[in-house]
Image 1 (cartoon, rainbow, N blue to C red):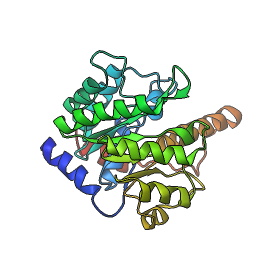
Image 2 (image 1 turned 90 degrees about the vertical axis):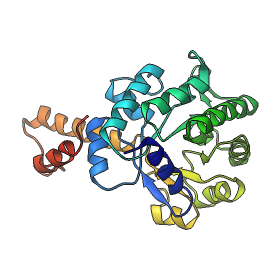
Image 3 (image 1 turned 90 degrees about the horizontal axis):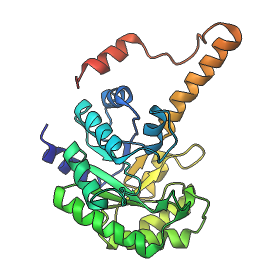
Image 4 (image 1 turned 45 degrees about the horizontal axis):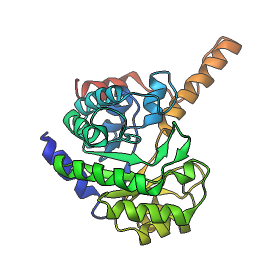
Length: 269
């Protein structure tokens, strides 16, 4: 399918209603999620890192671009990329990261304001400037840019600051805003009402359901690294049982060979 059509379809998804965008962490999960009928997919930095046996935010830009290229070849769905900070310290910085992701086939990407080296949220002025650079590059190459405020994932429970940042990111050109970690519908409602861009919300156990989020005006719902962690959790649980009892759990949610073959044969890389 033509990449311009895929990107246009992704932009259109944000205009009305609410859609769920799950996060595959490898080619197998990408093909399986594609076969289930979702309308778009997103990468997960934590899930990708785990698939490489690494901690989150330790993947290089080159590794991310290769991962995105492989996923985009494995699905005809729009792929949104968790690009962390858009690698401002790599050659060409934020703008080149956006361009490389576009060349790899992405339909969108995100930029966040958490600095893992400093273990701190970026100053708002720095973050806004980077969003503006990313937005300019995204507009040139046709990507949908999501700007993320990381406060609530990083122990800073300051909703006023989050809303102020997201509003500034939208004003700087971000097409979508996202504050992962928000769980209260009232807080999510403030983000929807007080920013000028469609809002993405991270679906979390114990938080609002997709219908509740849709009623609050949320346009897009993702799950971050949850599916990867569920998959790895099931693996560890089954392996521990094997170690302890010498048997595998008969009631585990085994993926049937037929279902796997159907999904994996649907599109060859």
